[in-house]
Length: 83
Image 1 (cartoon, rainbow, N blue to C red):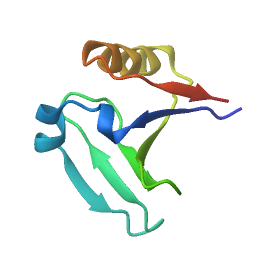
Image 2 (cartoon, rainbow, N blue to C red; image 1 turned 90 degrees about the vertical axis):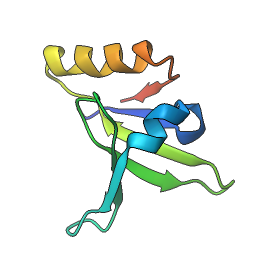
Image 3 (cartoon, rainbow, N blue to C red; image 1 turned 120 degrees about the vertical axis):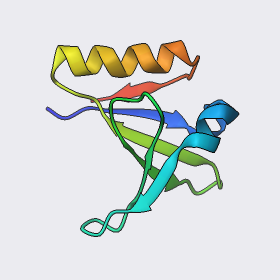
């Protein structure tokens, strides 16, 4: 079973957005974003209402999953996990 964590770009603190890096994935053509200290890169997606959502794979590995959740909680970023 695959799971994904979703956050809203507007919930990311300004300090993180300023230091983030983005690129276009050549294979999927998705815009990818990396934040300082975040263990995973996310996929940017513009929703129908214009909001920007970031999708992260939600790891099966407990260590990596905990690192992602700890990073999100450290920055106070609300997230939703969908399985």
